[in-house]
Image 1 (cartoon, rainbow, N blue to C red):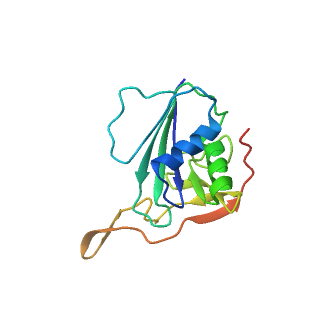
Image 2: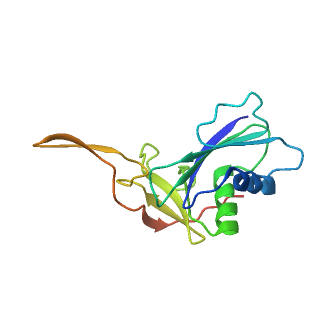
Image 3: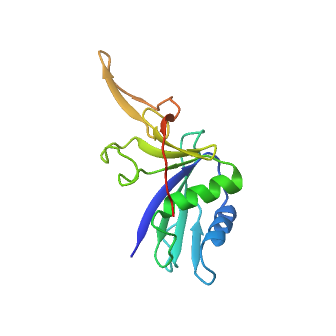
Length: 162
């Protein structure tokens, strides 16, 4: 079974740093491919393939898009990876929200799980640069705005990643 997820980090990482992070999590002998931004899909994607995707939000400069093919990282691999990176590098992490973990509207594109300071929160990324640009309309017509708000921590949540 293939699993795809993305997480967003509060600092930039290099390809080598991301590869080292995954090597700490995956079983020995599995093939790992980590690619820089804009790289083509590799011919051999291995057991786990990750690509670094810079964002336009200086507070959340790096997204990781991860495809897991032959590696068991548990029922919530994105949350497990988030906890590992946060603990190891003292960074904050944004993840998608699984409605089975937290009671949210699964259609709300702005809801996130945020791991901030080692604690999980339900968060909103509405009107952030991360989610923009936004098109707004008024008497003078339509205009594009980048978004200027910080990610809002709405409430603490309990997340079991095991």
